[in-house]
Length: 397
Ligand SMILES: Nc1nc2c(ncn2[C@@H]2O[C@H](COP(=O)(O)OP(=O)(O)O)[C@@H](O)[C@H]2O)c(=O)[nH]1
Ligand SMILES: [Mg+2]
Image 1 (cartoon, helix red, strand yellow):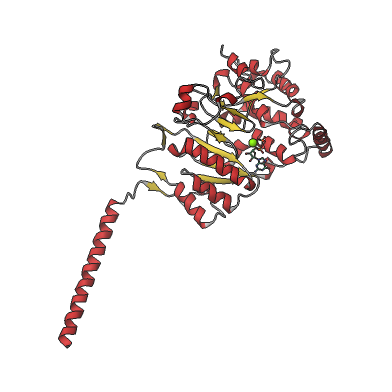
Image 2 (spheres, protein in one colour):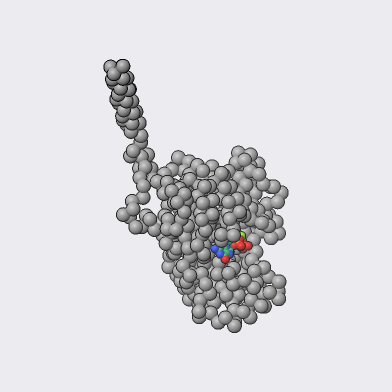
């Protein structure tokens, strides 16, 4: 009986030893094939990397995702997009937490149509902290790195030196004229931020090009190439899809100020500029043409350079972002048309894009099919009466 028990113990011990050997062998084999060197976590000793990831206060699951999405391949070389090395660029969205549904819709469309092939990073900015839900949902939709930034207060709110009585009078005047966003100060904050400050945000310092995406827009065709590389390789500064007339009562004194600026600073005006797109009388009056800035693929080094910096500072001190309702669309467009050469502007005619109530839909039937477009070609704004595309095209005829 005793020896039977001893035999049983011996057999069980042998099984145990065999099991331990087997597990060790499996562990060895698994670690031998694991690609240990192909990914690198952002170093916790590198404060810049952590600041850029902006992980503070993000719930654990979103943090884990952000950490994972910040992994950068080291053994397989720099990231590529349709076979070409990435440009130094990011996708960019300014949004509120309440924009979540529209942000999900926009981001998933552009991921599907373009960025799933390229994994360009995303930067989301807000004048309030993004909540956990917004961070989690955006992180779920994207594959590249995702960062969430807070806009510094001084880049957002109405400055103290603005005369509030004058500003209120301006708002009331516009309300009486039934102008959209006439009475809104936050809308003016947003227009001023997009005009003069977004490219100074710490999360954008490392990038040169950005693709502006708004909540609730639609991308209606595939983008099977890298528009950022297109910009870089062709020395482009500003890319757009829709162009039409600004509502004059929102910018009654803007052109007067533009003329004053270019008279004082002719050195900033490009010799082969696109003035003919902005004015039909050689610069005397503004024809109100502008590029619709809710879509922008552009070069931030242009906004950061002396010409635009001087221009924005000049406009800022006139107070028109608050006394009137100067939009970032006319401000960007006028600057791009005057301080860059016309060949540095680009009409992304091949990109189907809709921001209600207007859309641009590619008219080339082969391209429409190849890019799996889903827009109504009959509804494209390009050659309608409201469109400034004919004026833009005339620049190159
Ligand atoms: N964080 C934040 N984003 C805003 C605010 N107002 C507008 N935006 C964003 O700014 C962009 C333009 O605003 P939108 O309401 O679409 O203006 P519209 O296109 O001119 O009608 C969108 O990306 C909005 O999400 C705001 O008060 N706070
Ligand atoms: Mg919008």
